[in-house]
Image 1 (spheres, rainbow, N blue to C red):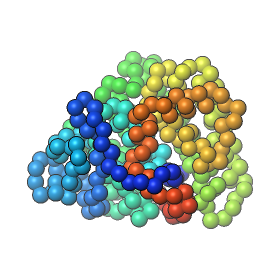
Image 2: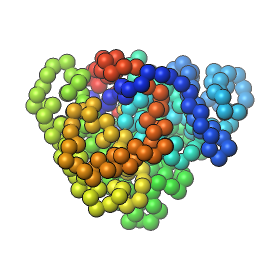
Image 3: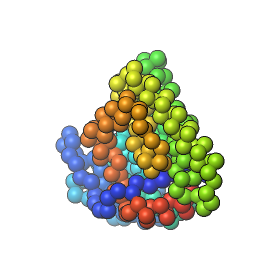
Length: 282
Ligand SMILES: N[C@@H](CCC(=O)N[C@@H](CS)C(=O)NCC(=O)O)C(=O)O
């Protein structure tokens, strides 16, 4: 059972169209699961399944196909893509409908989880695990992570802190707070306390540095995508002033604002609670 939950704010669904460096970076695919394999980039019949939204002139504009859903792990990838201004196409994966378990999706990620990226510039290289995706995008572009060994591993350690700590603990806190069929107070308390403890570690680090690894990096993106949703886990950040400063700092970044709108939110809190239960507790 892995932690996961949904964004519950907002109601509209719209393609995202933003210009930067003369092109548009994002389009939302509405393709059915049957086409959950990278579409061919050359012109051909396959492309008709993926009509481009306004702004994307040809399929060849797309560098990365992103398979994702509105969750913290998905947002890590979309925020990084937005920061790096890589032209990408959003392929929303219907987790509640079980698309992540279908053979077409499992062929990309045998673990049946989002996010997944396919890089058309590197022969369709397919990568799953959000941490690996962040490292890949940083290395591909030479941004959001220093190249010197010590700087690189300062980023890695805070990235792994999220992957092995904040993500699993906060994810389970959400499961036992909101989704699990039985109330298990000891489990709820355990995961919420552990999440709060990890927030305190972040707060201590952020008392020393503006960003987790010195400069803004993929480590900030990974941790922020989760910590920003602390209310959904009912974990307080009260008294953690440095953490609060950093949450606001990232929240002010246009790329973070855009990234958490990918894919566009699908419904209300009540609806998402019901849907989340079906994928996180089975
Ligand atoms: N360690 C994985 C975790 C991915 C993960 O748990 N993804 C969730 C969404 S946040 C998911 O796909 N859940 C589908 C399910 O529970 O069936 C990563 O970081 O990519």
